Image (cartoon, rainbow, N blue to C red; front, side, top):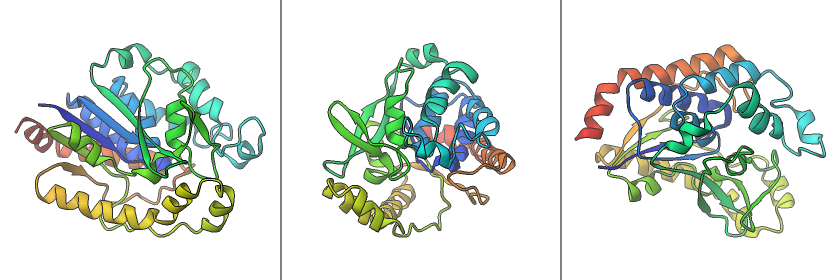
Length: 282
């Protein structure tokens, strides 16, 4: 029986998912297939590399650090992102809070990151390379419109996977018999249209399919969540959903709030561990 783990994005709100993953690790639960979006998969690789609390250390050490994120990074001609790309995706994993590439490479399953193809406006699912110390695929998956540069991979232009497929639960169900989905918004959340659409239309005018996807993003996301919760009621998947985001913003700097949201995810996984094991073994 093949098991899958789906990790929604949400920038620093995904620290909830990291708490869930740490709880799964400590409970001895390792999925055969992991797919995630944006920060969901950027944090999720530490689950695959079996490094509990690594992401907690990263955000509590560096969220307040201007090298990690801040407007100065966006105006840097060598960076063009709100996040310090070299610092966040190179210096931290390769020097300051080392990522275990060997354990990640030894993982026998499949790891995919969702990216949105600007030419089609649809999701592509890219395998996360096991020894890419520049984390290019992860950067592309995290590349929020207006706040990141466009990433070109295999000749295709990509941005944030959350536009093309914010919660890739259908992808996981196609591949797996049992699927756990970790969300980063409460059950009653409804996405609203992007208030920056005029600027998005102007910035990405050469990619009309992408602009259309952005225009429909809120509608598609809300419909997808409705379908996901229906699949949950039918027993097709198991969803782990935060009761609250505790006011954590996607670019949150308050390390205490981040720590509390991580703890909420960890505790939810711990409290539901028997249910999770029963579901995976059923």
